[in-house]
Length: 179
Image (cartoon, rainbow, N blue to C red):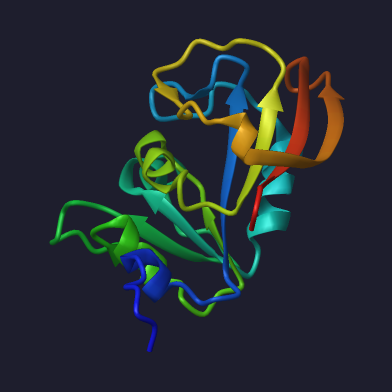
């Protein structure tokens, strides 16, 4: 037994499990408007699916409402303060710590939104998968500020689309330094 007491989160996470944040955000950190994505980017949705397939996804209840249903091939863990809320096909959790505990045996767990869940999980995350939309976008939900000195960019893929709307975006992966 160790003499120091581990943090509550480290006690519930599998030692080899990675906690990853997956987000699409504009240059001004906008991630949503009126509980929807403020852009249409089919390749980003494919990227989201490819990363999360076969894994647990942790999301807040408002993010779940915007999606509307559990996504196939993944385990959806919904964080809500409403202890009476049950959603068919989802695992319910009442705190981020409970949600992470529900994913204990997964090799990589994805935090997929929204803003409040991102804020709570940023200091715990090992990896950031960010789709950087290369423009400012009006919105009412934003990704939290984060210290880029703590993160090492490990991959960047420059993309663009003309349909369904012209959009320049980058798929960027950051790993926390020292982990």
